[in-house]
Length: 77
Image (tube, one colour):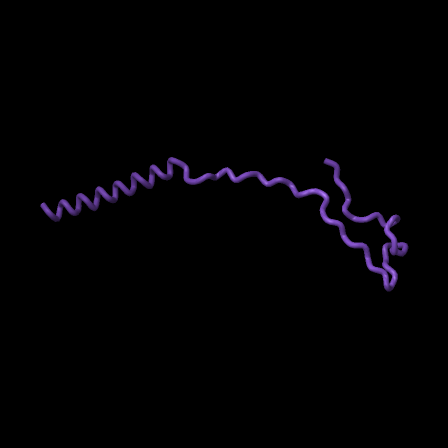
């Protein structure tokens, strides 16, 4: 893609004095917008939790639940 300078050329812009100044009473030329969009951003690759952390959390929850169950059974018996 070829870069296009968004600034107007001073030689062909009406109302400019030599050196780029604007005489009193003249309106300066308006700025043009960007001719191209910026660079594309890559898509986010993270789509949620990985399987390994979920398994570790599940195992820890089961161990804690088993501990509470064993404590409760120890109080009953």
